[in-house]
Amino acid sequence: MEPRGPDFDAIWKETLMGFFPEGIERIHPAFAGFIDRSRPVRFLDKELRETLGGSPRPRQQVDLLAEVPVKDLGLDWVPTHVEVQRRKDRRFAERMLHYHSALIRRFGPSVMSLAILADPDPQWRPDELRGGVGGMGTQFRFPICKLSDVTDAELESDPNPVNLVILA
Image 1 (cartoon, rainbow, N blue to C red):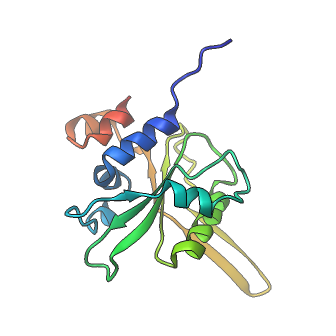
Image 2: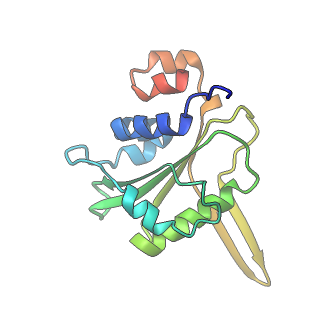
């Protein structure tokens, strides 16, 4: 049997669970400023499984769902989903919309969906899905963090512990 490589999804999930505010600082710095660090982040694995039980790709799961305490947004907390994508997938934005819609049905309209793109293609940047017909249209946009945009020197000079995972 061929030896298996590292489980990057599990590594990312553990990293974000251990250093969630720091991870959000790297992924979406504007949102990180609203995190209330005086209260704990709660991770919602059970709620995630219940919400996405009918996922169109059952083996493909949202990497992380968290109840993030916030300040200055008029909310107590924001359900925040983080998806790590290591390969180009032409249906990635569609999948993000599917997850986002399911989470809105469960938690209401104030859901944050974020993507970490860990693929090597600098041109691939799926950050929205648009569609429409007959005068009706849809646009779904979500923040992305393209890891290939960050240099090793930048990661090494920044003390954010999540940078060590990116460097590895």
